Amino acid sequence: MKGVIRICATIPHAQGLEHWGAVHEEMIAEVARDGVEVVIVDLPDVPVTSVSTRHDADIVAAAHTQAALRAEEQGFDAVAMGCLMEPGVAAAREMLRIPVIGEAQAAMHMAAIVARKFSFVGPEAGVNQTELDHARRYGFGEHLASVRGVQVASLSFAAEEEGLEELMLEAARLAIEEDGARAIIGYGSLRVIRAMREGLAVPVINPVTAGILVAEIVVRAQRC
Image (cartoon, rainbow, N blue to C red; front, side, top):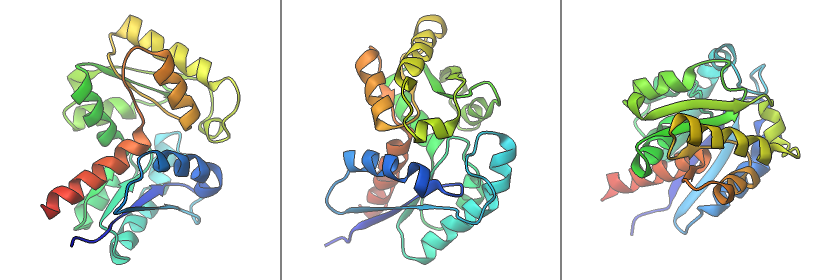
């Protein structure tokens, strides 16, 4: 009998469990199944509490890679590395033997399966073009319709502030109507993701659960 699949899910900044832990636990519960254990960890020693810029990503990248290495040492079967900016993911893939799943790549794979064109919708889009860089690197450049967002800080989503659903729906509708998106990669709590799914006529991908599910699939494929 094959053993339990153990996945380490990272939140790559300080106080990640405090800010995002309950949100991620609720999301993971939605895709929970027997035989899969998901453990969430953050980076308590880094001087960043939210990864919103390339500078933030560079600061936490090395510590994020070290967290992935610790997960392998602790016997995890895969690491689902959080954050759409994917700090430290490439380095972790180079160093680890177990599967390392980046959140952006996992979400784009799922979006590309259900739609020819997709858009990212999240906080403060336009500050950087990381999503565009990832799409090109992973071979999804022609599938990325746009990157749209709302001028709300990432931690406002963690706190589940009121009004986020409406802001995200408005940005997503523009991505669909003006940019030609036929799937949306969302952001935020399960409440926001559910509101987008109910209010839009296209699939909405949750990048957090996408990373977990792809990690599980890859481990299962290696065991077959």
